Length: 364
Ligand code: SAM
Ligand code: DTB
Ligand code: SF4
Image (cartoon, rainbow, N blue to C red; front, side):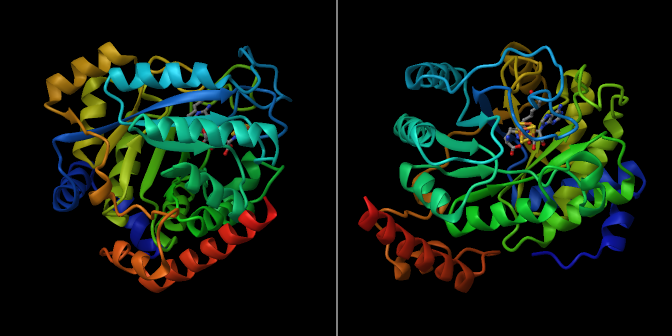
């Protein structure tokens, strides 16, 4: 958790740009290897038809957008797509589903099978499936999931202008469940939705106050999609993305900051400044979930120009991953004893997860 106040974060965000990037680059070099870039690939395993009303989202059923909807993809299709992503240099796959929340039943069982299949392919696995309960988080962890993505999206104050079908507290609750399942947290948000600078800073404040802070923070620039209420929003200036990334880097020094949606509108030079300012992860491929992304060739060229090397999958011994299947609470104590992690909290979470696991086993 950081001790930065909202006023302090605002002051950081508003620094002269060159000063801000320099400060952020210093922090970045202290905690990360600036020559490395982590590459993730998104697979939309269930597209469109979502009951929620997120104002930015082309997948909400209530907006008339021109996307290709599909039910949950077959297991083999997902494995095939992941193999391709791995061959193209991705170390992580993130499966996204246009669901409000995860429902127990066939679909969830199918997702668990996919998680297990992907983790056996020696890739890091992330999911973004909407709200989840603690026991679902435990089951995903048991299947081999490493990260769960669930964004706060914006500040608590601006949130109601964007989504009405679930609250900010629901999002925080899901993040808490993710932690209790001992998964790594990926949570960030979007800029360019008509929010103020105070809202952007408010979102960073909320993320930085999470304890522990998220391992991964995606910063998305809105991709305005025809048919959504935000279709007419102006493309956010790259300078704002750079400021947002630099500020995130300073207030969450150990977090991996991902330059996420919106890269098709950014020059290589602007993206270079984002990497200088502390971004060290991107989504690869010519598609995000439903909208375009620069594509492998462009990114390979960019990495070569900038001297960036994609990271390998984090080695098990380095990643301090909570081995939910075999571990005891005592063993967790050692695994989690890295700087920035509140050991006691995680032991408590581990104990809880263990209890749940036993309960689940009895129910089966
Ligand atoms: N349904 C799940 C959920 O909402 O948690 C997972 C998928 S949802 C598409 C994942 C995230 O994508 C959203 O939280 C939002 O931050 C981002 N996103 C969706 N549409 C976007 C857009 N048009 N531009 C930028 N980011 C977007
Ligand atoms: C995140 O923060 N950005 C990604 C991922 N998490 C799931 C999704 C971006 C989606 C952009 C709109 C689309 O392609 O549908
Ligand atoms: Fe549904 Fe997720 Fe899109 Fe919101 S962001 S409408 S929950 S798919």
